[in-house]
Length: 316
Image (tube, rainbow, N blue to C red):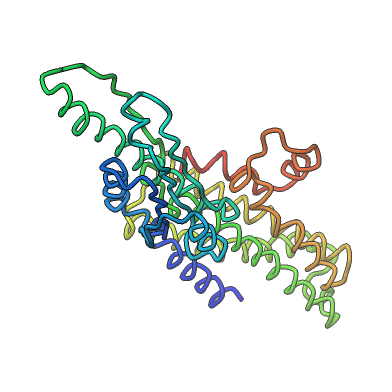
């Protein structure tokens, strides 16, 4: 449990997030306008590597059916007369729809479709319509620069992997500690393992051993990210390593305390599943804690893993 399984977990998540982010996600274009504007939108969408145009149709029913069957993740709707309304400075009524049931995929394709569509509209207005209508007009336009901080490529490897691997490893650590002490209780060898005078020292030694083992796996995984994958540690490396050790040691102590209190391995595993298994969800990584219910905020405060999201952006 302390060799093959951690190695498998690191390999699995590293492979899962290796490509960085999802690309070539299938979408559809509902083109009822059949105009130069709609062709320009199609061109810009085809140039975006995030999406892949699966079909171009004039039927909204066909696109909705593909969306319901998850054969596409979204579509761009270009209604009849969109170009005429656009050149008259009216609402072109172009719309974008996407499947938000799949949160990450939905956000990814919505951003890609929106950016490509806006770029196509701007290109059409500046390079096609205005150039042909007023060829000698030189009007300065405002430029807005948008900078994505910390994760400019919107990589899932940078966003999720630094939290997923420690989250699964600390859960496995809790199981290992509980199982090790549980076996001592089951066999009745706890008193031979430690006596009353050295109980605390023996317990801390066992927790320390497992904590160091899982720290070693974590540091090996960090070496892969930094030296092989090219990521970097933005803050203090020593502080990051100490924080990871304290995280694992805290969960090891919690797990050993529960197994000694219950003397029941099944109940302890149940506690670990609820307490440790909920760490990622209640730590503000995938779901924000802003305006969360009181219970959610309370639960996030009683799990050590909650400190990781506030610590990672500055140090890892």
